Length: 109
Image 1 (cartoon, rainbow, N blue to C red):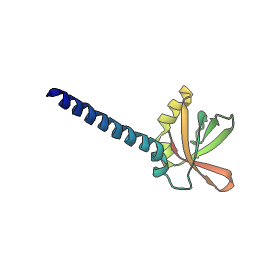
Image 2 (tube, rainbow, N blue to C red; image 1 turned 90 degrees about the vertical axis):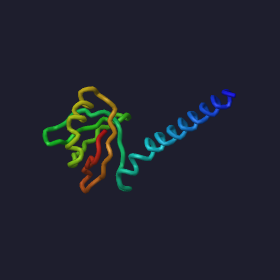
Image 3 (tube, rainbow, N blue to C red; image 1 turned 135 degrees about the vertical axis):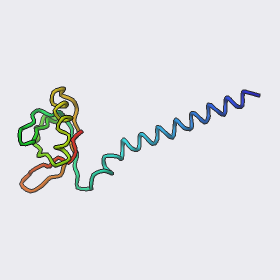
Image 4 (cartoon, rainbow, N blue to C red; image 1 turned 30 degrees about the vertical axis):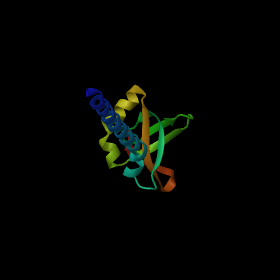
């Protein structure tokens, strides 16, 4: 009599786990694109330098160095960016390209 109850409990736990995995996966996949507008681009690499004017240089995986200007939201993440620079950690930058090839970083993670 307890075997069907154990089977049902295991089935319910697996079902909840699957839904949780699908939810977390979809947020990880679509979250960044939903929080930024359609004109936002993405680049990834390591932060090489952060200048006093809050601009920073990102070295991509291909070895290209790109200079970004910080927006207000980016300036709020200065301690996070400094830690990434010190640790040479992987950094994602969401940005928009403005006039004269100026890349304005909206979000740095």
